[in-house]
Amino acid sequence: MEHLYIEGTKMTPNVILDSDKKVYSITGNSRPENPLEFYKPIFKWLTNYLEKTEEKTVFEVQLYYFNTSTSKVLLDLFELFEKFAEIKDIHVVWYYQSDDEEMQEAGEELLDLVELSHEIKQM
Image 1 (tube, helix red, strand yellow):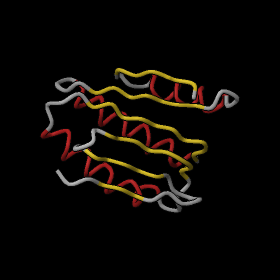
Image 2 (cartoon, one colour):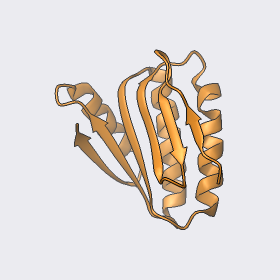
Image 3 (cartoon, one colour):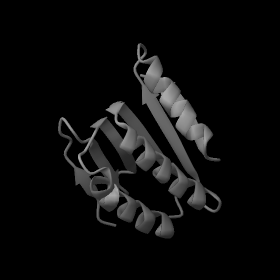
Image 4 (cartoon, helix red, strand yellow):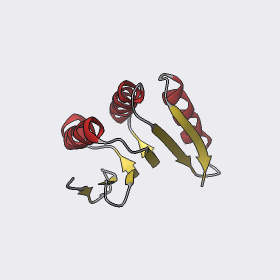
């Protein structure tokens, strides 16, 4: 399956979705002007991938900042994973910096809203 790489900017995260290397991650800041438009190809790629894969998928989130509209998109993303997790092995790892209690709590709150294998890890 073809990979999806999106180079991060000040406003958008770096995204790596590579089934050959088994790397699935979002890293950086997420405050795009139109989050639905930015995340649309990510949802499309992940849906296509999850429909086909039989392998365990570990999705890593390492955000330093995200805006309110991104939080809704992240919840939608986790709900997509939750839907597939009924028949697939999906695990989310939410990373936060040791001095960033807000990001730790954000991950806990978002992931508590879904039934999904996950862990919150300090970097």
